[in-house]
Amino acid sequence: MIRAHVSWDALAVRHVEAVAQADDEILHESQQSGKSKKICITDPDATMATSGRNRRLEPAYKQHTAVDDVAGVVVDVEVTTGQENEGMVVAERLDAVTAATGRPITIATMDAGYAYAKVFRALEDRSIEGILPAKAEQMPGKVIPTRRFKFDSHHNIARCPRGKILRPKGKLQRSAFQHFYADVKDCRNCPLRARCVSPSRHARVVVFNVNHPSLLRARRKRRAWGKRENRLYQRHRWRVEGVHGEAKTWHGLARAVRRGLDNMRIQVFLTAAAINLKRLAVAFFTLILYRLIAPVPVIDANLPQLA
Ligand code: SF4
Image (cartoon, rainbow, N blue to C red; front, side):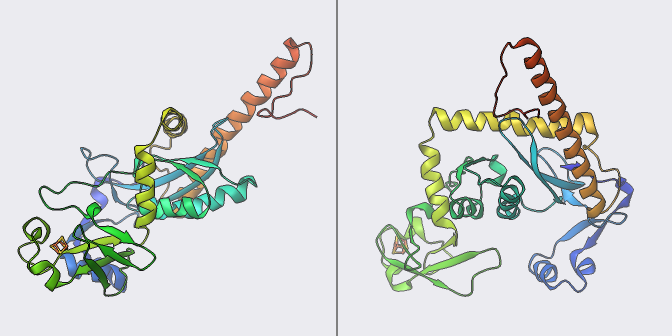
């Protein structure tokens, strides 16, 4: 999270309808929710976001960083407005890393903020091993949870714990979620009805993401994590979080210096370039040191070789 270069006085609370104007999508959401939202008058590209449950919302941008695991080199960086969901950028950034480095990615580690079905699908599509903790499904009290329903992606149906079929209805939602409905006749005399169907409904409805099969596979893999996966994930935490900390502490990326997404991009690219130049300087210094003290030439694939 990067704090936008605006003051608290620049925030205005307006009804979403008032700011949505011609944007049909936002207008539709606003009509559904009736909510108001805060907008930033001096930097409309910055949106309200928070980096933790206990922290207040602030006008912000979000930086998405890909770091090479061996030397900590920043191989890709992208900046979005603060409220952009992490899962929305991953597929594009994976491709960007491959294009920039000219090498396919074999393993990608990410924090739990990226653990969405869409991300697991993107990793599977690219044959990348993902090391990120898939969230376990929440247990909503005594109600039979969605995970007890088996999703059959081949026939696009779901089966309930009694083996009855639930079929999809309606168009696929913008968010890629699909509702599956049980037959009223099946649920009417079912012994599990009290635990399965809400009192206000006649039959059970479950919601699956179109990428749900990928999420299920990721959850199974998560349960089977061993030493190797835990080590890689631990490594991710200091490796990537370390780069974020370095950018904020030493290069002023905790706060934007200008306004607007384009200016923000310039700032994050320059910061990443500064970090990479430091890595390069360390690599050359190390190489020269090796040459001074080592009696024979050192060949290290991770170090740049002097001509
Ligand atoms: S209530 Fe309906 S959906 Fe739930 S287990 Fe019974 S038949 Fe299946």
